[in-house]
Length: 157
Image (cartoon, rainbow, N blue to C red):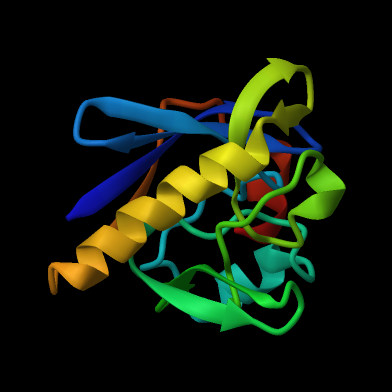
């Protein structure tokens, strides 16, 4: 089973996306600003762009597994195989400061934040747990809609 995170809005402070299962919209997402890189870019470029978790993960396809988070004391979907990043979770949060590089699900009703994050996270956890119970591999494909080349990208290239 594959979920798709389609990023559609890029600002200097955050990135907004829509999370789909097939054609079904699950929720929207909030992440740190995107560097517009993909997982096949050189690791040195990804690490430079990462800026200590202040950049969204590179575009690509990643395995999603349920994993215990010592920070939160709960199990959340964790992305595996993200070059230059570790511990990337899908977990509740509302503001860019809550991401630390992770993906925050919810609904973008006000600029720069998502609401309803606990319920949206619970829905994603349900999908991940059902996939695991069925013995099905769950992946997350991260893509971006067209964007204008940013000054930041020019700096790290």
